[in-house]
Image 1 (spheres, rainbow over the protein chains, first blue to last red):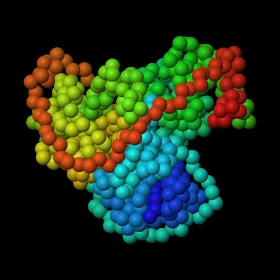
Image 2: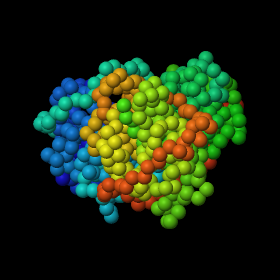
Image 3: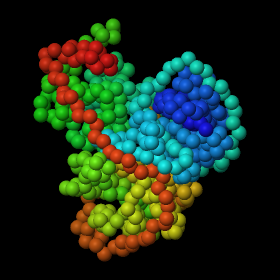
Image 4: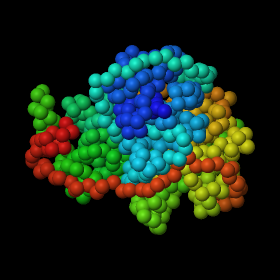
Length: 320
Length: 247
């Protein structure tokens, strides 16, 4: 019996969302009184024994460069074999871009119930019930998993990374490598920016900023805070900002610790993408903007007057 | 080329979210139903574009649900597609739905199965991957572009902080999101034509659900916004640092 955590990585490093999954898996294992193991497919530069800090006891690795790329069919077959070999009863993946493909494939392969987008540890007092966000963050559902093997895809930024002082044993594991069916031909990453999906802090701008030339203050504040930048749908549709920054019902959904919205009215479709943020700040000159109802802090005022003062104040705070 | 597009029925994006029966059922009273936007705007419209490019393409829609879903299926047919198949099964969990779709895909000999990246009600993002696994086909998730070249597909998909381009051979399952196509409004000809397009009802295959919904809850109500005067924005920074402790 064990909990097996799938450790996702990119550019040789473990993704933060996987460190969250490892922390979650280790806490779940201790709740169940079983061992917490990790599985790494591929090669990386990261220090794998350090996964002991998140509470994993052992990390199994298939060292094979060809496994570093996206192929959820190949990954699912290998994870399924590892689950059988290791006798795992729960598999934890991050519900990130990899997990959203791997989790469902693995679920169908093992006939194992999947909770996609878990936000809390399971309630195991009576069965196995996991809380997840539904209706685009407007509600939560308790999902009861009835199959012998369970798969949990953990929402990024919903669970804190623990940092203990353990060290994990790392061992090679021999798994059949099926032929790849997907060929990655290129990647295009925006260098030096924090990916929106992994950001703990987000500064976002809307139509109230009047044009792309006014984004300097959004970028400056984001830079000072170490935050990612985002925008509303009209802004992305007008090509003021790239589409990958669009947050909302049809764009990306984020759940950062701070969502700082400037000049965004807060249409219900926008709220659907941000309402799981822990703290929401709204700067808008319209006191009737619906976003204020969803906000924790707000300023009714002109962004062009307020933002420079906020930036100065943050500079002082950061000692810059 | 035979394409199958999965169509899900979801509450309208502005629907009030409430629950009945001791918080175990979604309160459907007064709810407007729509085609799941990701299925409609991205998966279906891109499939229609592919058919416009190559008119020999056969385009079918599939939905899993009861006859109350027919209105939504007709709406989808008004946008495009030759016929629709509704598998007559009250939806249980993702796995039971995916099993029905996989069976339809297998029986119909399709080359490409399209889904939206997720539904806006259960946000599972699960159907595409499960269908792919059940069929043993490759799956490209969160795709923003798709071009076909014979039996090869070139796609762009989202990754953290960017995108990557991938290639795969048909048959293939794709989940589509923003970028794949632009929303279309059905025209009168489409709406009239949709009435006479075949809407076949199929019987489900027996599959046991792996999960069930034990209950729902609404997030705790926000305490209300704390407004800071516009002439003292420094106070906001202080509150975020000392009270909320987020910066």
